[in-house]
Structures are given as C-alpha cells and as structure tokens.
Length: 483
Image 1 (tube, rainbow, N blue to C red):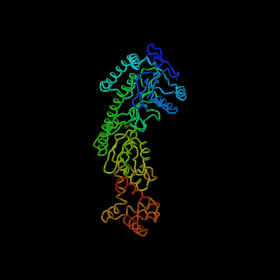
Image 2: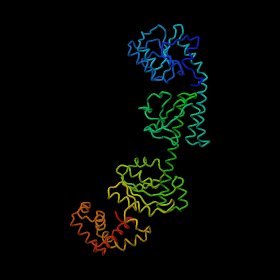
Image 3: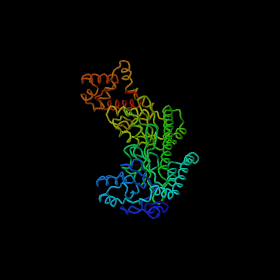
Image 4: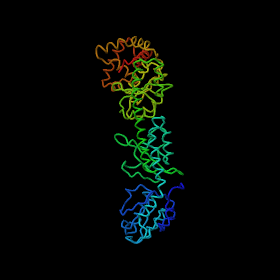
C-alpha cells in the first residue's frame, strides 16, 4: 500500500483524536478516504467504501445476531472502520459482535466523549487533502484523453493503458454477457458483473460501472486498484466509463460505415463493374485477402447472422430474400452452425475475380441445401459436379444439347418434367421415395420420366444416357436454370 495513503492505523497516532481499538486489530492497514456520521440501520446504499463510519450507537441493534449482521454489512460495503462514541446511546455490545470484527479484520474504534465527531472528520479531511489534489489532477488529465483520441488517433488499447496509469486502476471492459466490448481490452473475471445497472458501484478493491449507450448500457467497466499505485477514486473511474462509451460509439459508427461500404462493394462485384485491381483494394480495406468464397444464406434472422459474423472479416449484402456473404472459406463452418440455416457456398477464388460463376455456384449449392435439408452445401463437394467446366458457354451448350427440348416443354406447358427427373435421380432412382418428395402418385412420376426420355432422346435405363442427363442437370443448376 502506498506510503502516502491514510490508514486506520495512522488515525490512531493522531494525539488530538485519542482513539482506541476495541477489536479488529489485523485490519488497521485499511485505507481511509473520508469520515462520516450515520445513525441509519443500514447506511451502505449511501457509501462508496473506505469510510470511517461514526455512530453514537442509535443505529446499532440490541441483539447479538443483529449486531453481527450490522458489522458484516458495513464490512461488505467496504467501510474501513467503525468508530463508536463512548457512552451516549451505545447499547451493550455482545461477544458475537467482537468475534465478527476479529474474524473479518474489521477495526472497531472508540472515540472519547470529549472528542466531537467533527474533529475526526476534520483530521481525516486534512490528511487526505493531498490525495484530493491528486484525484483532481487525474480527473483533468482524463478529460484530456478526449483530445488524445482526436489529435493522436490512439488505438483503444493504448488509450486505456494511458488512463490506467493516470487513474491507478487496472481497467476491464465487457458486454452485459461478459464478451469483449472493445478490441484489445481484456474482460473481467466471471461473477463480478452486477445483476442490475442500478446496483451500487463499489466492489472489493474497486468499482463496476455501466458503459452508457443509446437504448441501454453497451456493457460494464470494471476498475481494480493497482498494486503500488495511488487510485484516483470513483469520479475518475466514471470519467473513464464515459471515454469508453465514446469509444464504443466511434467503433460502432466505423463498423456501420464499413458494413455499408462492404455491401456496396459486393453489389458492384456481383454486377462486375469493378476492375480486378480496384476490387482487390476494396477487399483489402475489409481485411479480405487470400482464398475467398461466396455464400448465399436463407432462413436465418439478420441478428443471428450478424452476431456470428462479428469476429470475421466479411462483406454482407441483402438481395431479395437472400443474404450474400463474401469472406474466407472458414466462414462456412460458422454460418453452417446457425440454427435452421440454409446456405450454399461457392468454390474458393482469388480476391478481385469476377463473381458471376461464384454466384451461380452458391445459388446452386443453397438450392441443394434446401432440397436435402442440410444446413450448408459446398459447391463441388458432390461426386459429379467437379467434372463440370467453369466456362458458362460450355455449360450452356451441354444443357441445350441434352435438356433443351425438356426445358422448352416445361416453359410452354408449366410442367415439372425436369424437376421430376432430377428428384428421381437425387433419390437414387427410387420411384416411390421420389414421388413422395414431389407429392405425386408413383404412376404420375413414371409417366413424367417416360415423357422426359422421349423429349430428351435419352433412354434413362441406359447407364451412358443417365450419366449424360445427370451432368446436364448439374450444369443447369450451376447456371441457375432449375428451382
């Protein structure tokens, strides 16, 4: 404990006060910041900690159990010592009261009747005057931290380290759920967060304060006295919480700006209006480098998607009912873990590459995910899709050659020949299973398959024809020609 910090033991050495110790000698090293008189049954809601609490005895219960509870409440609130006036209204103090003081190392002092309480308060005030000057100086310097943020463009960890040196506290920040609130700032240990934002700020060894934000606190600031430092008090910690709130607002604003810029960039990439070099520069601003994928997400609330993407570099665009996400391949595992999600991922590509092919791949994969009930499908993970060309012209030629007549017939008659054949093949040519999935009678499906074979000119009982048709159906999916 710093040598310039007033302690209970120091007060015992002041001749004018004539204080004596009745119990709790092991706690004489406790620091003292103020001396206060209270005759309330429970003064703790109005205390900050480190006070000498003085009483004539009116507030002290008469029973042994009540006296013990009274002392324990004061100790839990961080009171440094209890000073009792000799005689006056003091009840008989039970042995349980003194035992509790000894167990907790909570000093119980006696003030002679000839020494007024105001004399104790004046002595304490005079002794802590230098500490008060230190606290005022710390407050003024914390105000100066706003200038640092603007003039020196300090990052968050550097700013908080400066405030820690000024205040004499180790500072921690977290969300109401205990997660990191600002990048680079450690979170406090479990169990320290209050149950309510209206809870008293004092905790053993420091303070816990809400970090204000529109709509409710963004999180909590926890400040513990640093060993060997001179803590500057609650007012300074409150100012640090305000600085943290400003920093949170700045970070949120920057994230929202980046999110809007990211959505614009992804829209331009999908429309192929950016040249590759400009696209790479834009993506680098969002920390997207190396192998990249495009993921189409369906059936997931925006809040859940944003929360899972929060710690990953990405671009996000809402397009109709779909959410397009561009980022590293590892995003697939994160998105695929969302509840009830339906998502499809393209093959990896280099930043700056055109996205038309990746978009077709992701849309095909998300449709497969919807059909199969799987949360996420990766394009190219199937056994045959890998053999398809990347060239849209080659895929279009294959589809037109094998499925052209079927597609035209479906369009003219609003029939479901292609969907029926695809569903039948996806279910390993099990007619009854496929018919159930299509909600039709097996005889109806058999008729559609015969009609499909006639229009395509392929006998579906032939291995070669079946393979050709299956590849053509995969190509149609890659081109976005199937539902």
